[in-house]
Image (cartoon, rainbow, N blue to C red; front, side):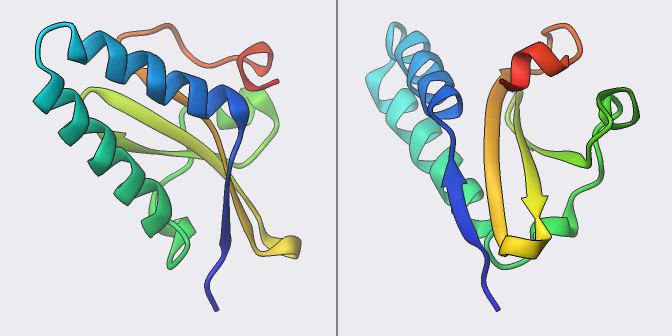
Length: 104
């Protein structure tokens, strides 16, 4: 059974911010990056547990996972009881570790 994918407003804002940043150099590359990010996000509906828990998961007290997209981390959690994949944030890999404050 496929999971529903829900993209939180903060994650959508992250995606648009990074696409705008890339577009400053190349609109074509930005469109390609964003299109592929959406493909990855919606592919999680088929097998959301295929990616490992993030290093910060224990400290956060939650089963948070990520998938890499170029130099970005697409951070999400699986709400098993509701069959939902919740996309929380999209972060550049060079940023500091994720905290609870970043997820709300």
